[in-house]
Image (cartoon, rainbow, N blue to C red; front, side, top):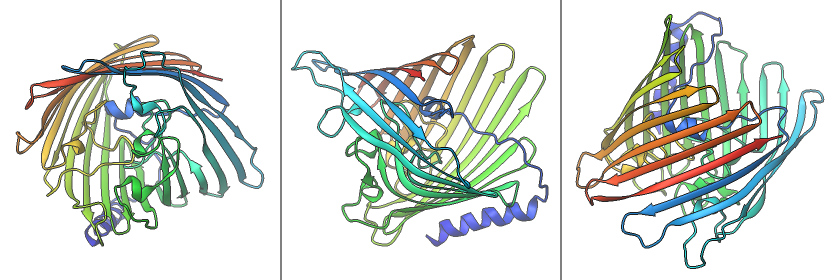
Length: 409
């Protein structure tokens, strides 16, 4: 715990001493395959969304595929601000439309713990603003490095939390918060229910939720620096720092990303042995007038127990549709290379990734993702992903196809 707190304090101290510019520049975000697929774009004028999803998983040698077809969406209502405050609520539904043979197993990721459709109150929060401070209290969507929506199924992840964000010290932006519960397919227990965050993290005993603290600095032209600290009492704490640099040339844009992530078990270590030290580098080049983007990224963990998992898709630059470096669960590395081409409303991309433990016989997998996206303005969108995962040790694997179509109102 002391190590991670010390690292966070060192990050803020160094940046405060180094940079005196108070000009606020545009925040630069590092693009990864997983973050692009899981990104949510809530629109102020969007009151509802209709969603249709299909997913199929086929394992080499299996007698039948795991499939699911569902319809769903959300209805959002919100008040106007009165003296800086407003209230918002959102109901989300997912309904099973699978009509395949009864003996054919369903893919479970779309549905609740029993494999059924559901209706849930996904958001219900109070949003208050005064001067340069905002506070959100209740069920809400959160996007941070280790807690995020990761919208790659029928319903994204939601969190029950309070978050306070302050911009009094621009170009610094500070946040502090506490997260109690998580809903969505990645809570690993029941997508339809808000489950205590410590249970999602692997503890069988109740604790006092997760605390977070962040500092983001945008005072340097073409550079964004951010640091995060997460604290789960009696489980573990995490320190995360990231730098993004963008270089814009006449016909190309280069984006460089550097990251470091450290996690330590603390207290009674109710989540088991935790000890990670993960660094990464990402380089993206975009040909501005040709619609072509190329991406390369590398992550390596040199900790005792492998990279730490996340409440969502996670921060690591090499994360793909299925594989991430934290799935190795021991010391190892991962690299990806890929690209995409955008033509009018269609974007097509291909990415290859390699994930390997230092002890290759323990974990050695590769993944190839084919991604097609189609959008008509903000009203209609479609994402299709075909992922092929191969286990190099077992000489087998599986293929997953996912199709999600959205209509916004």
